[in-house]
Length: 357
Image 1 (spheres, rainbow, N blue to C red):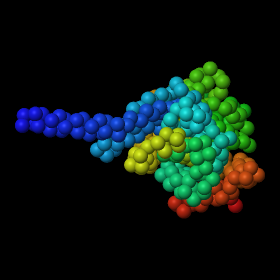
Image 2 (cartoon, helix red, strand yellow; image 1 turned 180 degrees about the horizontal axis):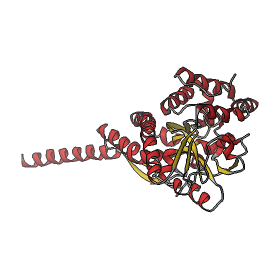
Image 3 (cartoon, helix red, strand yellow; image 1 turned 60 degrees about the horizontal axis):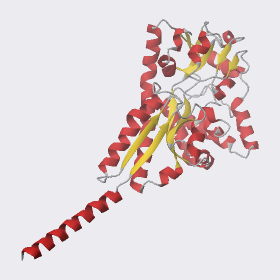
Image 4 (cartoon, rainbow, N blue to C red; image 1 turned 45 degrees about the vertical axis):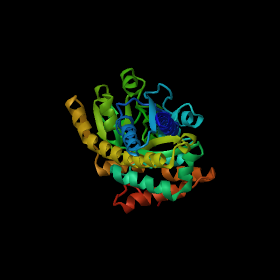
């Protein structure tokens, strides 16, 4: 009898060990390296670190299994520089990251429609909704992610662009002859004004103005306040070139496909929430950024609607030229431009110039 009990107990222990072992084998740890060219002082990186990643962790834990994600966060260009994140994710150097579409214009031209269409809207939410709509309506937009083996998770809209200079700007005529740092397609906003665009990015604005490489920059106020560019360019001209779609978080498709469907859904859902939260955070911080710059000694000037129209009318029809150039490359440039402008109009935006008419 005693021997029988021992045999039974041994059998139970073996069965229990097998169950525990099976559970351990089933659990998986996914190692993901997340990158960004910009440092986390900028909201799109901050929210990746402080919202996207912990929210994914929370929801994965809530599934009740033992799967987990081990994150390696590398921001500020430590693994992938600005303009190099798309390629880094495609090649598997990184698994996920923030892709600045403004710096990927040759590879992702359709996502630069807002930058190619100045004087749109300062309403970040109208912009976000319009671009999201285009992502679903125009397959070529989605292909700009998938052709580089990536799954788009969430986008970043930036508050409206203005000018920060070391000289006063009251009218469009005041920029003539001055060197202005202009990232990517925004250089087009100076065509016909006499202003001289100089290719640059947020990481270079402060020192570039301080050392005389250029005399000001086209940028958005939340970033201008964050990097304190107003210290070297204290004249802030609120031109209101419009809020801009600047990029988004994407993940390597092979990495994404390795997830169970439940975890894939978490990444997609959190990405949508990231888009909304970032838009709200940018909107909330924009007004505060102006106040911060004023407190730091900056002088803020608001260009009138009439002066904005003067500026817009000085420009060649950049959006239509861009759309036609896209068509020659076999891309639906005209459909994207029309969809963008109609999307803004349907949301009550009154355009300074109807670029498509």
